[in-house]
Length: 639
Image (tube, rainbow, N blue to C red):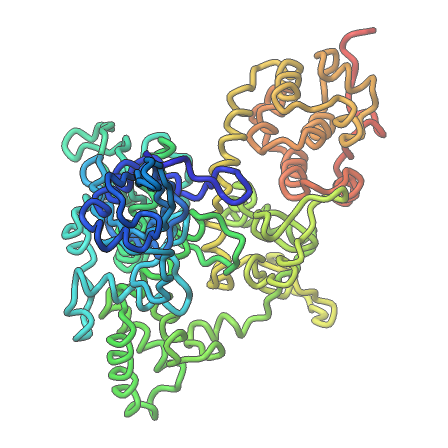
């Protein structure tokens, strides 16, 4: 049995490769060492001077030191295990029997393959001394079994995948039959199902998941239309068709390629994690382009890898170049009829139809391969860029957009974006953080507003015409108003918003708040305070309520008005769902008044700002301010 591996500082090494070796292959490695010595005594032991002329040499112990040259693909894991073997033998010195000992380092090349719940071990060879590091490995992984893939090796990874499952796609330009490939890989694809109790929101993008362990799914029976729960096996890809809208075939193919790469290169990582820690591992695909950085978690690296390789599988680089050259040559003869932007539009459209991918993926691929530059845009993009856009939006314009634009309001209410420093940015710690003065942009977010902030189109705010009245407009006094338009956000920002990894965690928290609500306002308030571990004095300070008003409010001794309820909600930093329930419990159920709408807007958009800033906005809208500076409640019980 191998000794427990410890690092130099004496602490147990937590790298997954070491945990895996200790848990599953220690006996196998120890047996390999003993078998190797038994089979090669003359060559192995002659290097140990004290064992010359010794009989009955034995292996007393084997101590694992480290693993290197780790590779992983499909269900196979390869690595060099470096061990110290401790040997002893009996010798006769001056007619007396003495036991002598020695240690020798060995490197064992191991291959472990997962097969139906068990690991099959095989030792390829063993050598004296430390392992020689291999700089060129075909399928390298790190100590946590995460594939080592750089930006420069993305096309190599895609080619390795295609060479196994569809080699013809590397020889002739052709659409890659990704659905057939997944079936060839042994994967089961379920279109029309979703994981039971899944907390990741389906938000309008093609949504895919692959199960690396048995999971429970829900799907609708095509005959009875009943919802059925069933357990699916390892290697099941789940696609929810409700999220497939326009350009569905291209997006679906990208999702399938994404999940196929997860299965091809990251299967061992997921399997080892499941067997070590008992945690089911599910990889999800939601369209998102994320900033490249080194401080990611292992799971974030896995998602970046699959997201980056998937379009390269569908559009192998050399074959893509051949087809793109062919199409650009075709349109060169039409330059008199079409300008360069129209040519780019036409080429993108034909490439997308040929490879069965989205046009956005083709546009990115053309830039990666040098056919168009960052400044080259199609006609449709030119039209979009021709408008004057900005990421800055005033509170006045934000309120107007929130009131009139349902799509924008849905994004704000979902919590996916937040209003920070006159920008609506992605609600992610990468871009925003909370300070004593409220929410602020991080240094990274401030430098990369194009990556995290919504664009707003500046449109002229012309007076609304009045029927039967003609009037002259002084155009010099017409101001620009910032309006949200989806087309102006064709970049990765909307995709980032659609896939916030934190949303499912936020959902858990807000759902618990929602379930805790009961009809009585005071009981609701106390329950929420208890669950959120809030202090009364902190709520009073944030809400601008005085002590007596606050006490009467949470003890159901007042009939609160809207401003009082809003102040309390602001003080506890409640979610929209909780705020709505508190308003309802206070007697404003079903209210669609303008005042409640204004308070809801402030609670959602200005969360993190001081109550004084919020009150300034409320005053500008002619609504009672929050807090006790104005008496917002009438007593119903005399104290």
